[in-house]
Image 1 (spheres, helix red, strand yellow):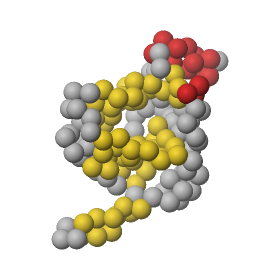
Image 2 (spheres, rainbow, N blue to C red; image 1 turned 60 degrees about the horizontal axis):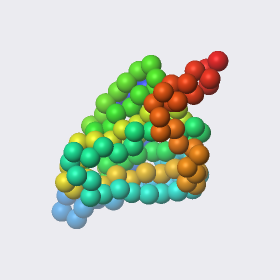
Image 3 (cartoon, helix red, strand yellow; image 1 turned 90 degrees about the horizontal axis):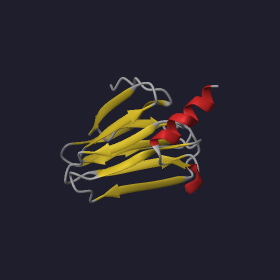
Length: 142
């Protein structure tokens, strides 16, 4: 089990069913394994191994990120603590809460990233400048 060191995060475990001979099935139900009503689901694949994705935080959005296939490195930063997690277990998701800077890198060739979000896409939700992110954290704790 992954130990989460940063704020505004956590671990979600999906139940797995199946066996090696026939494959595995992982189920995620809103307000059960996923602790919110799901308003958006998206996935990423085909990232070159040296690509970097993310590099942003959100103002209020909460998401859960999974390595549905392959592996990648997830770097988290809450402004005070930084943590790096190797994502490769499709049953283990990491909660990306508000004001948590997230970066994905070191993608395996077969990497598929699956994300559940608690709200619809809104560009104004994104904090894409690290200095602005740090300022938002200060205002949030003041």
